[in-house]
Image 1 (spheres, rainbow, N blue to C red):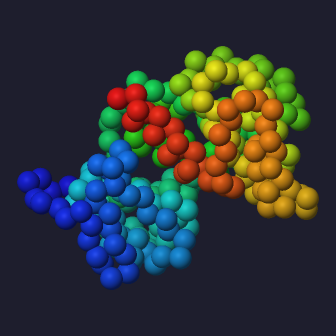
Image 2 (cartoon, rainbow, N blue to C red):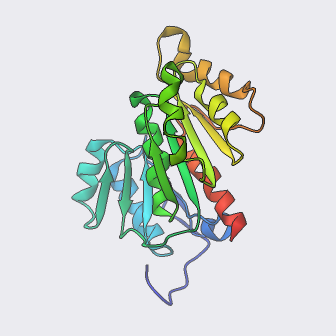
Length: 228
């Protein structure tokens, strides 16, 4: 980021209007959604964002997009499982705020990692607890101590989507449920898990869109901002 340079509230790049004031409004700067964009467009947006912030993140980045982006910009890092790409150096900021990120199955880990990696970039302390779905509930109960003191918990599940209800019944902190598109035919690409989570019998479980680990992470960061 260039110091002592006045950056406009937004900048029109013809193919994108880059929002430089988003961090002021929301506490977190604009994040680039990679699908449908060329690597050159992603890099151009990131370079523009770096005028007003120390790093820029892109989500849902393919390996091909990363390979091309790193040939266009020097300081790029790719988190393969999370499909997140960072431009610039990662901040060493650490918040006094912790979040558990749980997955029901191993197949749900990419969505869980999207949430975890994003949170870590903004200083949240993350506890990962993976493959603890209701098909073997003893696995979850054996690891409760790893997340029961967290300030928030994100629970990622496909198939029947039952895990957030169980976790919501165990904890007092905010629980954010993320349905995934993992499952056989009548999982309907995550719709079954979504419906289960929306009908949770555990009161107050919040639900984001299918496969939306980023959205869950943003919900946690909004809580962090309120505690500052």
